[in-house]
Length: 271
Image (cartoon, rainbow, N blue to C red; front, side):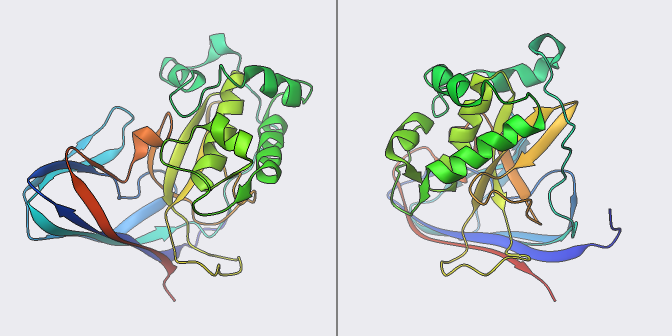
């Protein structure tokens, strides 16, 4: 491993229109091992009181109430990250269920968008003959990467992994949830993850920057990053939140009538 680091600017801006005061929970701050936040700035216009807390899955969330009218929320940070791709351990083994830590067991169970009980037969048909461990999780990523066609508008907020697999299309959220579902069907703990992913050592896309979704599988004695949408060991995965599926990791959860009018995301290396 190298000892140098890369500096990346990450952040986002949301513009909301509300008809009345609307409570909200916001998840936008990168969290986790492998990167260090050097500077960060949160702002809202107009200014509103807030407080931060850790949710059920340990994600750092911000709680506030949007006033009636238009509110602009902005987060901007400079982060030092490793210049190395996501770590790889081809020898990492699957842990039998009776050896799994107590807090990992929840990520073996079906969830609303990852119905592993519904796709269990399909998972064992496709991957039951693959040697357990890292190679089986990678085989799942290979399959999902090839089975789905990426396209904005091909899925909806309530699309489940089973829906996306039947449609053979989706966005990164769907790729991650299908892979999570297959892993759980095989008793491999897997959790949905979303965050920032800068375009480092890859051709720049022809679409605006957006948040990215991937997943983490529990092998040996830790969580490992897998990205079935890109299906490569990319540099710069910076997790914002982790959970059972996309419901647990929404960027903004509002409790009332709130219309998202604008959203901008950035994740750019700093020269």
